[in-house]
Image 1 (cartoon, rainbow, N blue to C red):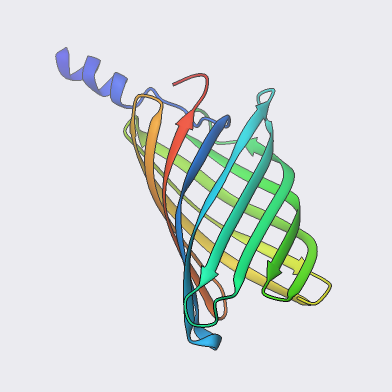
Image 2: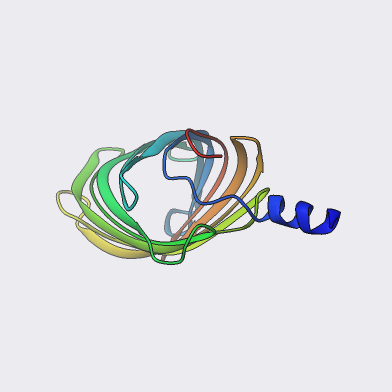
Length: 180
């Protein structure tokens, strides 16, 4: 009976869509043979049971070329379908990026899944399609993966993003509001 009580508690947590997070990021620019360090901050805010608002700001400086790379986005999304322990999600957002003397803006669409198999662990994966105009006239697909370990409402996480010539590594802290 004690095992059943423990396992029920271990699997009782759902996906939280209202949180703030911030952390360190490292960007590896293969085509420029350069990388940079920086920080990011962002969050999501749930609207009802199936919708959310998303926002994020990233700020990096490259090591060799000493160029600033900053990106921000603001958008909205839908989540649900799999029940309390996992969510399929989709997002669209306006994005603005500056890299040295170049700047561009446009949109992205993101789709993925977040899964919380036990209350202490969340994993996720997805893809983001960006289309930017301006000086940075580019469209690309970015593949994403992340994992978080939770203690109460606080999560400590790692994430990785990759695209043609850019890899990004993040270490971060997330604070969940609401249901946990």
